[in-house]
Length: 451
Ligand SMILES: *[C@@H]1O[C@H](CO)[C@@H](O)[C@H](O)[C@H]1NC(C)=O
Ligand SMILES: *[C@@H]1O[C@H](CO)[C@@H](O)[C@H](O)[C@H]1NC(C)=O
Ligand SMILES: *[C@@H]1O[C@H](CO)[C@@H](O)[C@H](O)[C@H]1NC(C)=O
Ligand SMILES: *[C@@H]1O[C@H](CO)[C@@H](O)[C@H](O)[C@H]1NC(C)=O
Image (cartoon, rainbow, N blue to C red; front, side, top):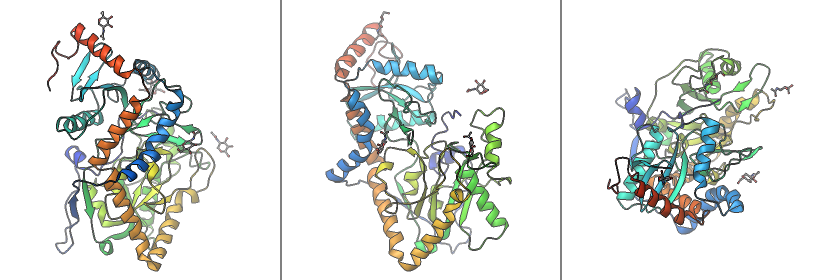
């Protein structure tokens, strides 16, 4: 199953509002209290907290490479050749990036394609990376070392540098898989496409007491062979079906408000025979209605927010943590740069006991009901407990996932990556010299780019 640049299956964000029709009308009832939007400014993180954050996230990414170091800088091109051979040329999502004298260059082996902004054929995620990093660099918010790396904004479901692959140098990715088969060897950096620095607040006692989700029915295909009829369980479509079934049968009290915003036909998967679709359909026998897309702020109106896998990781998590609602996190093997610092029952509540690739039972897909029952009981006994988790999640997300944390992490990750290559500076000096000598240092001719 190959999914190309549909990464970060999230709809509830400002950028997508431009492209899709988002149902963004505020409360119809004029007495309804509007959601408060709070922009986040400068963030203070102590050195000790930051060091611990790196220890929990960056260090495990570096560990397999420290064993292999010293690495060779020119092998970045070998990694590119290797991936292009295995996955086909995917210039939209795979790019070689050069940072040189604090400027970004999008490079091929023998020429510079563009400076600052990514080339036209790059995906939106790559373009956004180029725009935001260049803005940070030119405004003096960020200093990066001279370095050459290959960035991957693909969903990474094929596990391009997974335990069964021999990547010669680290792939710099936005997400990867860590499971019983082993850990992908990618070094993670933050995605810079989705999300903004806004916190959404709504008084807890006004929130609807259900678990909420709106999204594209992406699916990893990871949970297969659940039962004879449910061959591929997709959390988004499965829970949307349960939610609809509950509504049709007037289940009381209600638990879920889960809706998919596109038909569940897996159009992003190369499933020409409809094979995967049939396997997945067996888990939710009725057709599922589609509902309008909504803005992220609207999520603050619900007590519980479901974090469900996309094709792999879903970038919505950091945004959900920036509301004063409680995140219910579907267990999954997919991680972004910050997940390994999150603790169950500290920052979020876990659910989904389905096992990968093996027989479970239907209860393993339905445990969210029991989790919500438990939370309702706990809240009655000690309302402070839920609020402690929400506060911890909010503090975490503000420190480590707003622009400040993303820029700082990018710098630390690329600096540590560079340290694996003792010949990096020497190679880059030679490489840039060669491009200049050949008149290919810019896409337009031999001038030192100024933009
Ligand atoms: C410069 O051109 C020469 C001759 O075509 C080629 O061998 C070399 O690889 C080029 N160098 C770079 C960095 O593009
Ligand atoms: C994968 O990573 C986890 C967490 O860092 C670690 O506990 C585990 O030992 C790793 N697995 C392998 C096979 O290296
Ligand atoms: C699915 O599970 C059944 C029952 O455990 C097993 O017999 C079958 O081989 C499994 N199928 C696959 C494709 O692993
Ligand atoms: C899609 O699947 C068909 C049939 O399995 C295959 O021939 C084709 O190469 C695939 N296309 C892509 C883009 O992977």
